[in-house]
Length: 499
Image (cartoon, rainbow, N blue to C red; front, side, top):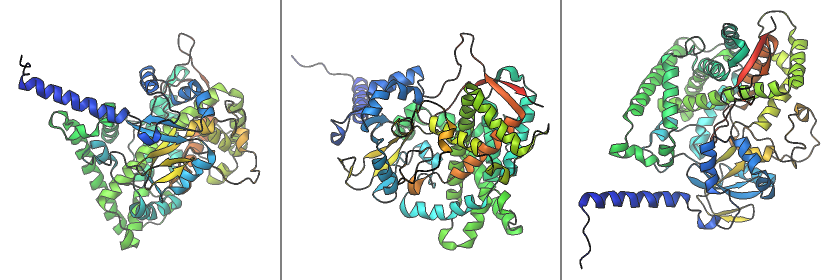
């Protein structure tokens, strides 16, 4: 008896399904050299995604596993990663970066993916000579800028907007996001997006639309879909074309302005202008318009997310620890005074606010913006944590597990800023506080990010007291995205103006 012959269409469908199953299998299969190691069950990621389990809740759920196993395997972004929380090995990974370990380039094998086009080649996602050349331009620019006044003026606008709202039940997500967008627009581009006054401003909406569409998990897992006829995202392509056109016009205009009016006040000039100025100083380190676009976009996106979520989490922690909120406020008032007006702290005044600074660091320990740092990849065969690791293996650390480990931080689930006021015991440096990473690839904008938080928070403390508003069921309303950055959503506060 002859076997049945499938119609051509059915054969094509079965072939496609078989190919899809194989691709999925390749992505969820643990590589041979990582088999046998403790690993986070793959089913957990589907469960956490469905239940919107925050990274901190994921840690609490598997606390015993993370404390028992310093080195394990976990599935992140469609790939299995070797993760270690042993400080010696964490230090080894961070210090080797740029040598035998590289930064992972998202969608390296799929340059046609729209996500890869969006992030481009920046100081965040590059290696070796390319990274060094870009950093030589960007690092001095960050060192020369101290935009306290700009941050303060935007915070005044934030306060004016909040005063017009019903502050007894105020959802803080969007005001903080718009504030961060306006600060970064002025400090990076020298352009006020005016998102606080007009959230629907064209560029703000464009960026938010692009980020939202590029976050589609299907395309993040299968980036090659962007190159297939029936999966092309023409709307995203149009948005990216519009963004590029806008950015290149801005760069050309900045270059003309710089030629006509050289920079005099470097402390208050935008980062793009300082980068263009640095490019003119040396032909060997010049950045192309494409690289200027890629780097300012990457810095804007990273800074926007970090600023909004870090200040949001800090306000949340202070709504649960009212005695610490009052202690921070007392320090700010003792330095800045209690006049009934919106005052911007000076750089000298900020240096005197040691407890406020400690509370910001403690919040970054408790709620790190990036819970997993796994954007590292071995470039040669080597041994990590006693395990032979071939080239091309993704490696990293679990920031939450490190910063909530009782061996590194006594009583880690207590929010205690005093731990950052204690003087060093002189012990050899080990990277147990790593919200900004560590080593040569530590976040280049670390000091800028801390300054941003200090200015905004000091001004909010002078203006308001606040408590957490619970839902109708008596439970907290906040939730956080389960993966990627540790975002806070639906933070509802009762703000009371002090003047």
